[in-house]
Amino acid sequence: MKAGSIIVDMAASDLGGNCELSVPGKVTVTPNGVAVHAPLNLPASMPTGASAFYSRNMLNLLLNFIKVGELRFDFQDEVTAATVITHRGKVVQEATRKLLQPASRGGAKA
Image (tube, rainbow, N blue to C red):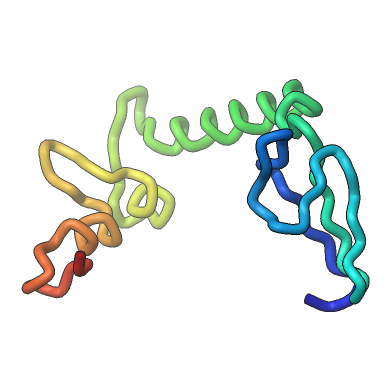
């Protein structure tokens, strides 16, 4: 990474983290100038803002599905097509459907 880049290890704890260079609770700067931030319990440091942001996003997503007072899915809408995985017993989200296809038909291989 370039000098001045910043890595935030969001899983840092006394048990480790996601970055080999993380030192829990500290900021480490590598020899080439990359800062590795490893805050402890990051989610607890901003629960109010994060909860409000998440709930606002969920509300807007769900309101997108409500048309004329009832739940309706417009699969031509890119948000609906990307977020609704199943509908009426079928997998309707394209990427998920491809992943579930048997390997012999172009799906993921084990």
